[in-house]
Image 1 (tube, rainbow, N blue to C red):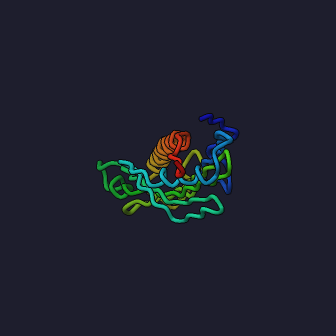
Image 2: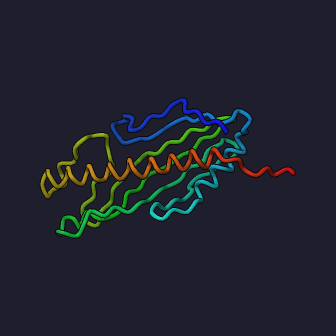
Image 3: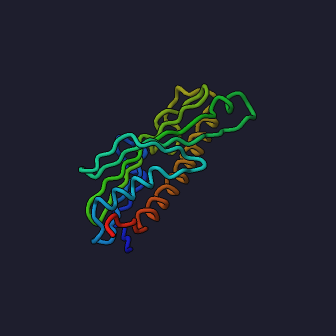
Length: 173
């Protein structure tokens, strides 16, 4: 199968919130229905550190939406670090057409056990002054959260591309 990215954009500005999206061309003979079945399999794949759930399926429109959750561990050296431990959640959508598909990962949200950074933006430093505990702590955690998001979403994108590139079993013999 040939896969040629025609668009790969990461961290686009849409109200300055973090967003990953791309459009991938596949073999032109791959029908949207075939790609849809493969994408459904990808959404159901188990992962050791990222929980996935399907929230919406539209086979006629070629759309699958899901939610993703990954743990965030800040540390245990101080109470503020313990309160920062929690999860990062985000949404993922795969749109399918004959010979191509589009993925979008967005709405990244950190929720800690007392200290939550909320919706993650493209800002280099934490834009939320209401989070106390010092600018250094805020910015260090902010950059760490964004680094984990970048790493894990890139892994998801690579896995999606690998899965979508594999042929699915034909239903007709």
